[in-house]
Length: 315
Image (cartoon, rainbow, N blue to C red; front, side, top):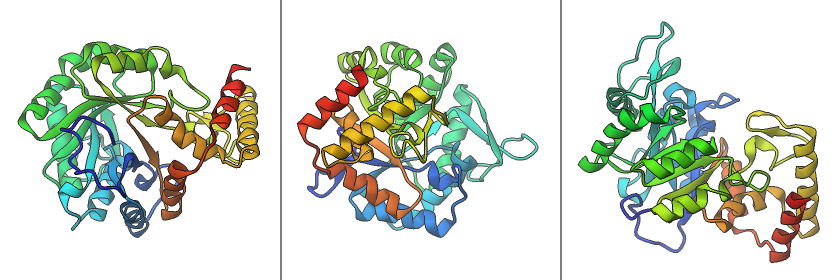
């Protein structure tokens, strides 16, 4: 992943997928329960395919994603992969009390305070079984002022101390991301679903602003919750059923891709990388899903297909 040198610990190796990351929300029981063995198999499939960046968060399964990722990475040399997690939420038990560091919770609560960052990271490190994180994101922080005066002060200290190598913001709300890009001392922004085939909003202001300030962009949510994989079988956009206009547009895109010998999902994986993103994170809950997005990154897509897809959006 072409992020700041401090973020990426890997010496370039030809077979590494340095612009692909595995999103680990699905192995934290997102939508469907996942067994430990299946989660481990998914992470190992990513390692075998050359994927070396793993993105997780306390929110995903109230700690289960971090615990399972740590389980899967046991015995893997720490300098052979890059690890990202998030702060901004604290894990709580069924009664709403904060759980002990390294424990899985029943839920999580938002907390953008400086102290909460330290507590959250302490727990994440214990669950992941590591002593450091390569990138630490603030997770969906909509209150920019509170984040700047609280969480981001702690995150900056952690970066200065070397506990984390880079800090950033993970969010899918463009005005919020644009303000962080302009005001926050961050290395990277993870935009969720705003630099996709069907939603290109990040191109207008966020991407130029990030480039101007030397901030790297990681694209998540490249399938917009499913509509860019299967517009008929999974017609969801941002976790809700898409409206008829979006579904019709995605169906036209699918047909255009097929007419050029490509799939809609493959084009969706590659699109952000063609438009300024430094890396793409794709969620997977099975080894088969991992192999699908890795193949999508390498799929041959003719230049004329991109022009045809642009025409669909323009129409």
